[in-house]
Length: 357
Image 1 (cartoon, helix red, strand yellow):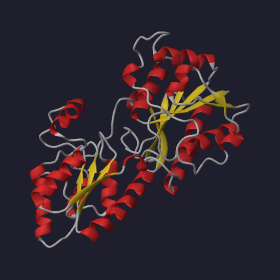
Image 2 (cartoon, one colour):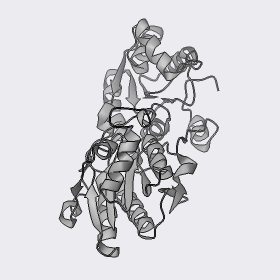
Image 3 (spheres, helix red, strand yellow):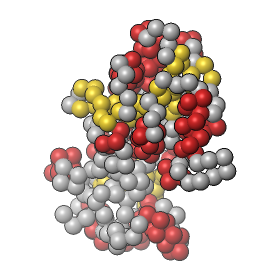
Image 4 (cartoon, rainbow, N blue to C red):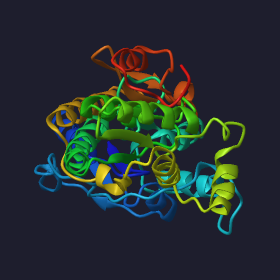
């Protein structure tokens, strides 16, 4: 049997660990298994590019960050658009057949799974593995790469907090997460943030400044604020993301964090700074938790392929590794529940979410 593997979308820690686990399982348990790597995610499949993956290529890659297959983003909305040479979808299907694949493993996030579901509906044997530092894939308790990112962000918070304390500053730290606030929420709680702003709970400038002013008035000399890059003002809720992106520059804003830092400084009188962590959150070696999770997910996905179970994606449910049908989870997101246990716990110990609750 011939198996293809690709990694698509944003990189994260653990991709190589999954590739390794898939490969080792298949080479050990499937007679005459042949592995090929498809470079640059769906981009490589669109172009029809591949290269063989031998045991020696995957043996030592478990702790490596990034992906040996490289990755790229291919917008889902462009997959079925007519282009010269056919749509991207039609070219992927043709190249899947030309490569003689019996199964394609797609390691990626929500967008990757949408395209995987599309390929599956068109007759390709596809198995997904849920990857994203945003932890927002529907149907799985956790995605690989998330826990490592939480560790990285928490460590960054700890370091920035020492500067905040030394200079008696309010420090805002911008964390990745455009649609879902899982990474900001978990790392914010873990780092002892005083305020956490996430996309699922629109914040009020008045409420934010009142909370921080009250903290300063009580004699505290510093405050740490975790801000998801997708956090929105309560006055912006009615606008779509594209509309916000268009309107903000008109007001001299680049990121919500920068604008918020300026407002906080003006209203509280406190020295206020912000730090955008950016791609620091994606890179580096996976933590022990993710190494184990990636190994289990990859091996399970490979077992599904060996058993002929296609059109599915691996998942975690209650600590167990299981699977979901791609058709059932594609296009759906898992968001933070504003009334959920994590948020309610955070509120119970005095963490503000910048709203009037």
